[in-house]
Structures are given as C-alpha cells and as structure tokens.
Image (tube, rainbow, N blue to C red; front, side, top):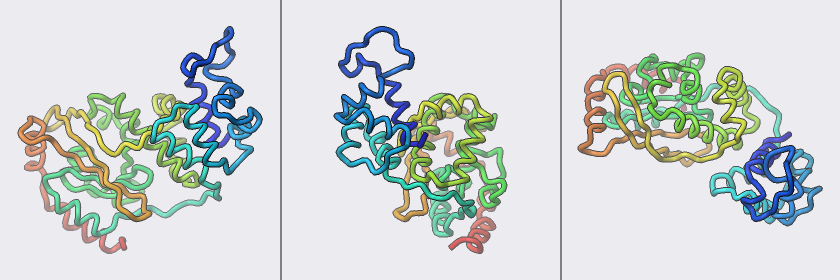
Length: 293
C-alpha cells in the first residue's frame, strides 16, 4: 500500500456512518466507513476509490481530491498532505549527504543571545543552535554535536528515546502527538528520503508509543504554539515557539522560543541565559564556515 492509500484508509476508518449522516446496519468487521460508503460520499466509483487505496491508480484530479477531502472531513493541513501524497512521484531512494547549516544562518541565531534558537533540517535533525537554545532543550548533550553528523541530535528521536528529553516536557503526550504529526508532513514531502525512512523504522521498532501514533497517521504543520517544560536548572516554565522557514528549498526550519515579559518563565530564561558561556560559539562558527556554503 502506498502512503496515499494508507492515509485514505486510516482516515476512512476514523469515520463512523453516523458521523456523516449514514445509517449503520449491524456489526462491522472493520472499523469506520466501508470503501463503498466513502466512494458514494465523494461521488466517485467504488472501483476507482479502491484502486486509489490500493495504490493502483495515480494522478487523481483536483476535483476528486477535493471530493475526498470533503468526504473525509479533512482539515487544512490534512488536505495539503493529501495533495502532497497524490502529487509526489515515486523516485529511486538514494543515500543523501549529511546536511550543513549555512554560516549566515548560524550568525543569525548567534545574534539573538536572549532568544533560544534551534535550526532543524528536513528530518528534524539539529543543524545548529545558539547557547541558550542548546541549554534550554538539550543541555545534557555536547554543544557542538550538531556539527558531527554521526552524533547529530534529532529532536524526534530525543523525544521518544532519550530519558532526559522525556523528563523535560511536562505535557509529553501533547509533545509526542505534535512531533509525529510534523514528521508525517515531512515524510509526505520527501517519500524518497532514505534517512527519514530509517528514522521512522528505528522509532517504530524502539518505541511502542511512536509506533501507535505513527499508525494513526496524524498530520499537522505545527508552526507555533506553546511548550510546558520542567528544566533541570531553572524549574518549570512555559515558552511559546515559532517556526520560521527560509524561502529556499533546503528544508531547514528555525525554531525560536520566547516567554511573555514579566512572567516567571521570562525570569527563568534570563537565569538560563546568564548561566551559559558565550565562548563556545566562536570555534563552532569557524568550523561551519569551512564546511558550509
């Protein structure tokens, strides 16, 4: 089954006949709507819809995708994901080279010493962070680990497999749901990414919680929100986050954290800022300048 077929099947199974104004007749062997019922709601033939789920038909028209989105009651992010899956051609998988943060991006986050900042790659791997960002989300890891590909932290892997990171989030279930939803979006955009496929496989095998969430196929393009932390140095705090995406095709994202002025969380961030040493950053910037572009 293709990614498109899996997404359609999972979303179809999540709908009950009563949810869409249909009468249910007796017990069902499988949960949710039958293929024939979903096809009827979308106004397409049952045979054509079955072929879509089975990965036997490609190039669905915009009208068909619109009809399926309405029938499945998809939200805006899910509709975008549906179109991405339907429009992304299958390509031969190839092993990609480790990504590198641009020196200008590193200078940008360095210029914001009061704002925790983390630069993520297309697989949620950490490409760089400023000292405050490092200390906020992963102070137990070496500061220069993002620039050693073999040791590069991955925010999703840390969330599910690293005990320190798990303890950091007081609302871990919400964070896990958000992380998997975002990873689904990334996977839909890069179906031929061998490293991303390996990451999903690793997490599925090593974390039953990840496997359960991944199988539900949640989708959300999480670009802002709040995180509730229990930091080992400064205690509990709530920070807002914003995700900024550069206008190129690198797939990098800049994750920025802030706290409302005058709040205990803002005071905690200030304490954390005073605790870090800025001298670590100079050598790291020079290294990025040699290997970046």
